[in-house]
Length: 249
Image 1: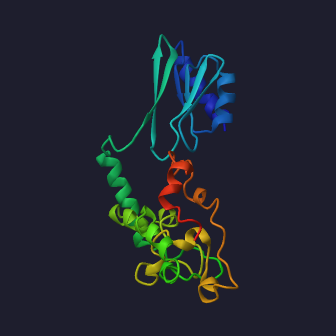
Image 2: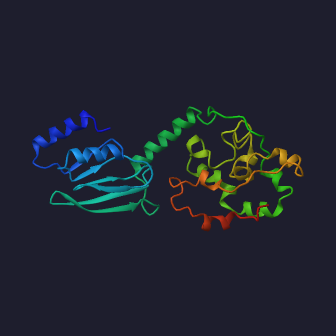
Image 3: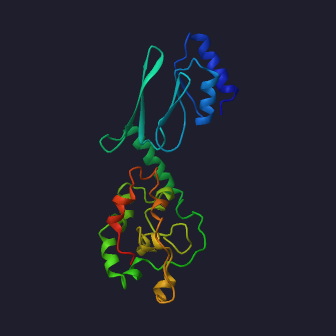
């Protein structure tokens, strides 16, 4: 928060300059707002937040955050000691990766793999999974739609980037990672090594063995478990759903 440490730092800077233009603040939105109210000489405060880039004014002070995960860049034009223009730049594939940042990320992935974090992930007891292969025996049309979708090859995208050992990523690219009966590895549980039928419908071994008396779960609303504003900022259910819709079968 905006404790005495921040106040002291500002006092030291202000004592050497007639006007403080910019302050980088390791704090969240509310604390940054309090800081701006207490130090109205600030033209710009850059603070920390999750999600997308954001901005707001507190008096004559502009407060901005570039968001997180390096997805946006907040650009601010300061003229005559005042912030006069703000723009948000999407850091999409049109921009090449920074070699230094890429090296840091690669070192992180290597450490995640070496420490076997995926294997030590806490798992909870759930109903048993059958695997998409069991579903395909009866649901031929649904399987045909699924096999042509990105869901059927979801783990491959992580493998191509060497991120298939990172629990933070893998959970949304396989089926049942948090379950004791869910995904373990491509070798041990190959029919769960994708976003399969049960990623949306839930564990369905009982349905596979007794389809008349046991029904799978309702898939409505399951998309947003992984397609969050952070992970899929452009996700639109009306656009994405037709790609995976199979008539509810």
